[in-house]
Length: 189
Image (cartoon, rainbow, N blue to C red; front, side, top):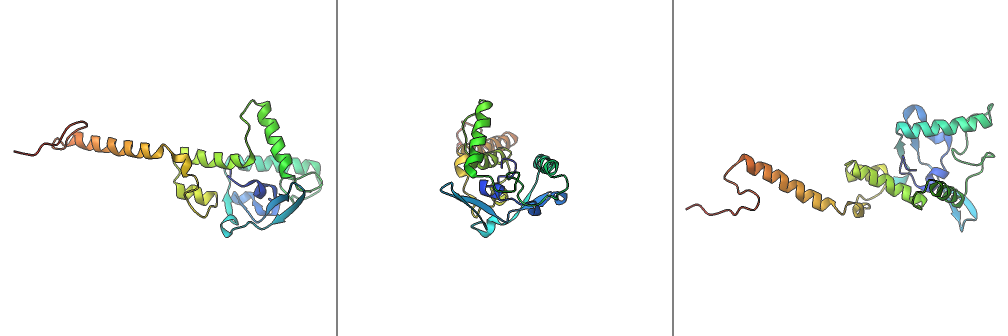
């Protein structure tokens, strides 16, 4: 989830038939939802934008290869099919169980308590920190609009005007007639 920005339900509904390791991509075709943490439903994603190909980094590829090895070790004569992340019998993992496992592991590592959706926000934050354009982040996370993570950019306006001021200062240093920082432009006599 952290390496792709995928939603919890998308990860839990991911089938091996939608993972194309040779192409380093996967296709989001399904999402899993638990109604009142009871009955589990596989259904198509809500929006057309959510049904899309996702590129896989080498790190995510390695994680999928490890998951494939685990499943193949449990069933050496079987093919990779069904859910990528599920119980040994092939049934889906309950979202609450996955959240409980995440919280257990983060507590063991003395990390802050987070939710599964926080991993998606963290992926967006990392991409923003790495100066990936918002339009690309939005497309990667399959949003319909690009302003969903504007709250993560609260210092961006300060950084933008500071960069602008620095560029103007550099230009002013190269050209004497323009006033420098703190100087007042005086009319010519």
